[in-house]
Length: 427
Image (cartoon, rainbow, N blue to C red; front, side, top):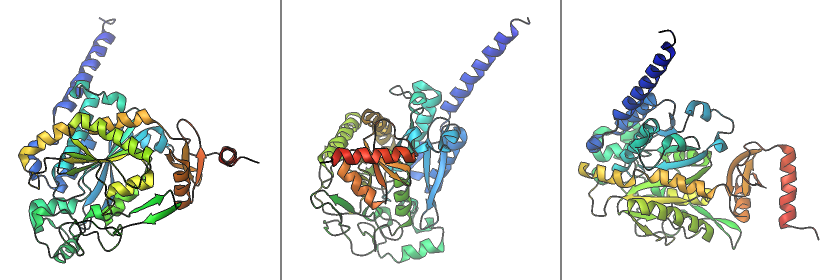
């Protein structure tokens, strides 16, 4: 009997582990059959419950507050999250990827799509067959997925529940300044500013070797000159606290690529008229990989008119691939009716994992931006890298492989000399 005891204990331990894993994977927190009825507070509580249920792989970070003082939050997902995120080299220890949704108020399906992605990925981490196409237990050893599920909570609540959803006097005052009262059709936040027109808009002109600011310079037909339910860009770039919070987050990590969910049209936008050919080539490659999964058509429509989009800001400042995915058919009424949630989710449940697959294939680029000896991000093109470095008072170091997070002074001096010698040889 004494000899058999360790074996029995081992079997019991294995059995309990399997039981706990299956229990974790079976109960669901995000119910898409109720998607139409969730508030922004419900979405945030889902995130907290997921963090509590899967504490070793999920961490919630509040990155700002909306006009109505509702939390803007990020969900970080990786293996051993608490240990990893406290590392000094967190930005390079694992690759980072960003998924964003909920910018436009009436596009209410996308925050729930993202929340369900988070839950299903966590479930697969403990029960591998939950997502047969990928192995999250392996993926999360190499990457950190950052989800911004709902970046316009005030607007999200307004289109669903009307003026009664406003919880502060500041929020109510802001809303009452907006003459447009068609709340179910709002794209904007409660200040009447369309967040996806409010981002700074500049790009680097390779021919003139200068940064060009074109925010609201070349207008398209979708424009309002006053606060309204859609298309008003705001009094100045990044006037909205929600936009400021997302901008800061985008620039805080070395994201390898970006997914931005919008609605409607079942289209993937990828092309940037101001970007170099190699950037558009990489972005199109990502878009094609995604299209092969969700079946959406690609669109390279980019006239250069209109500005302030999150995609333009992100691509010009990081030169990393960003695609905008328009979920739901073009004819769909908004906010999204409940019967469309599950189908939209099924088409897009794997998209962040496809983006990770694409990013791993590319790897790191040779020109690395350092600010005060600390790595920020890498670039494929030296000229663009130098333009960014000048903008952020940093310097470019050439290298291969995974960039060191902190640059040793001796290595820095040697690398700068080699870079100068390579491109400006001594005569």
